[in-house]
Length: 261
Image (tube, rainbow, N blue to C red):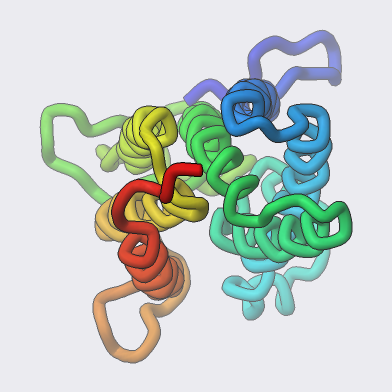
């Protein structure tokens, strides 16, 4: 749609990169605000957010390589290409690896895992929502064919060259669906975090709400991989189902208000 914000000679600023960076900064600012409300060290939370974001980028790319292994095995030079660089990767790969890293980091620094995860969850949702706008600008993560009035048509040749998005075809704006849903998730988490809650409650709500949104959006998102198990669910949806179940358990275990001290 608009992959380059501006160009000077051979240098250009990718819109995707700018929006991902903006999402990260906004998410970190929200996480530090939530940390102060939870009486956690905002600097420690900010440092964790930076490290987790870097680990998350790695995890998203790694899972993308795994899910598209056949393609990259046939075309190994594409691993270091611009289209791979500008691809968002697979979000759940980044989320799971970042979550594992966060567990190690918090254990090492003796910070409460569930309380810190509750603080980070709204920021993760906000940053993700803004980042998906970057996906829309770049043309990656595009939707399936759409006959509805709000269908979008990509016409930018550079977007096609970077991501492979089909041009001059009416598509579901899957990136905008997910962005809007995740903005709503972020708002719901901020609201819930303002109420008395047991540690882990906000993380559980995030897993439930975002997983539901992701499962729904995946039905109108283009998939190049074969659907597993002979069922109409993508690999990403199966991961979301597992995290949805984990979130439901966490929400159930944290039901009710915390005991007053």
